[in-house]
Image 1 (tube, helix red, strand yellow):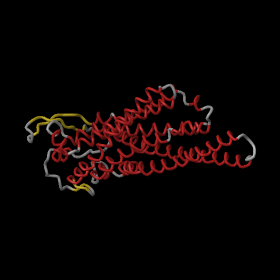
Image 2 (image 1 turned 180 degrees about the vertical axis):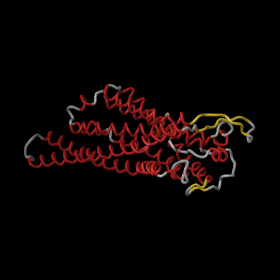
Image 3 (image 1 turned 60 degrees about the vertical axis):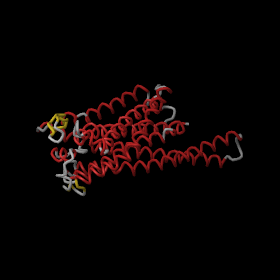
Image 4 (image 1 turned 45 degrees about the vertical axis):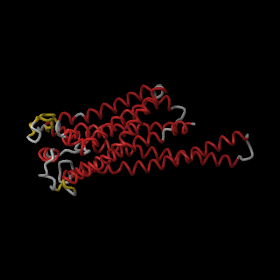
Amino acid sequence: MEVFQRNSMMNNSVMAGSEKFAHVTRGFLTVGQFFILLAQSSYFYLPIGVVGISGNLIILITYHRIGLSSSINVSYFALAMSDLFNVLSNTWMALCFVPGFTKFANRYFQVGSVVSVTGAWTCECFTRITAYITAFISIERCVSVVLPMKVSTIFTRRRTCIVLAVIYTVNLALGSYGFVLIRFTKFWSPRYNKTIITTQRMTSPTLEYFYEIVLFFQSFPAVLIPLVTVIVCTVFLSVTLTRSATWRRSFQDQNGGTGSSEGKLENKSKISKELQLAKTVVIVAIVFIVCSSPNAINVLVASSVPEYRGSGTYGNMYRFVNFATLILSGRVNNQMADSLADGQDMGSK
């Protein structure tokens, strides 16, 4: 919720082209350096956004054609939908910091202030939704390994839809508070000799009180719960599959002279698949931890250290790190779920 939040006068002047605050240092970055980094990184994120949008559209179309009769298909469809909006928000943010587009758009609205609401807040919201759905899918995968015969009765389509609806509703409700706290207004720009759109933060004791509550639930629970859940479920799944493969191999060695050749080949195939899946789970888990931890640490530090928030002394550093890690964590959440999707059926066999 704090992403790209800044003093309105500084934001307006810099984004309008003024150099008055270009050398003002906020933490390790001056305002000028902050926008230079955003501009340079935008060229890197735009192609990623185009690929992400195309990929998620293909996933949505594919699952729609396959059918949404099973709970796991519903979960992956909801995950792709959330990730699509996440990528759209990321791409919009990246586009807004491309110098050419910024120069053009500033004639109609103040890019820095408007993108903080329309891009950053929506991006954070759908990043949380994606993370929660990934955690939910991880739990379902674990149950499919432990109770393969009962997973279809525990995770019914109706129950899955209810859980996903709750995830979307709660996170959208928390994310929408930014549109209550921030209002879109118009002001006269002497530079362009016309009225342009900007944002204004509404302040009152009641709004600030609820803002702190929303900020808390958007930081600690939203960051830690999905991360811890995915890590625990992934480790459990990896250990379980490794033990299963070891048991199959031991049983085969003890009964090497018995059984048909087809049965032995099938058993070897299962052992190979389980060991391969266990290795994949470990690799993806490591990637998930490495890529998601920076965003988690960044948000947790901002929640506990006011100077590191968007409006604090180190606001520029916080906003740039959050901008980069939100895109990274969003990509990893989706790729992790897709990479382990094959384990859903494999683990239940």
